[in-house]
View (cartoon, rainbow, N blue to C red):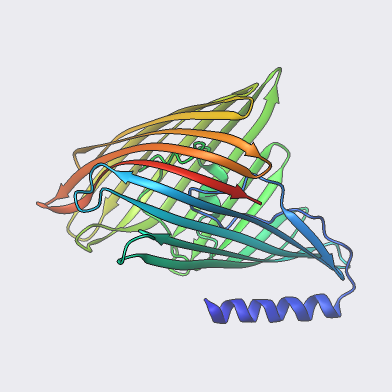
Length: 343
């Protein structure tokens, strides 16, 4: 990862220093953030020479109560992420970009067993009117283009995606053609992710429909690996300050000796009342013959530009086995209250 980033930065500096460039527009490239928290503010931008630097980020301090965790009644968590894009336009009007996303999280911050983690993604891209080609940690590009909109506040609906996926190191393409956005990603093992999004306002409503198909891999709770094939669809309607969406999918798992399947349906509604936003989401499905369920309720109150108070109540439960061994198992009921600053 570090070698890739160093080489990408060097190539970017050399290219922008040698070529005659125009000023790039101050807009973020494809998001490398696959987490539940995204910045809701306009990015900060600064032009240096022929290159425009764009930055977004989130700082979140949360109190978490997990009713299913018998060992720890409550804990505090600090979470922060940022994405920096360096953008430039070449003399032939092609756009060159370098993106870096970093995320730091610390759990149980007031206890002796506090644990922290830092992870990052990076990508190098080039694009024009025909679209943008990216390489690096772009495995989540199609998912972000075609997914249901995240709930507000600290809502996080579990299982609302395919279990199988492609490798972190991937190449991707994103292109817009009128009301259509098409996207694809492929890794070095030939696994792929394909998606298409159609969005257009009709009369006083805005409609969005997405389709996604995936060929990936999944490792279950006892480290058995499966090849996966999946297809999903999402439909969304926006009327004024209210949004309603519904999505579903089917997924097949197979290895040399085992095979099983999964289906799921997710739906949600969100509404804004002045400075207050609320969302409610629900998910149900079947995996390896067992039921998976989750719900998420989110509340966000805008205190000032970028500053907000957030609440989330999230419930998830699944216990599926294959040949009497764990396939996927999870159970949690978490209440999350946080103060968040987005920039």
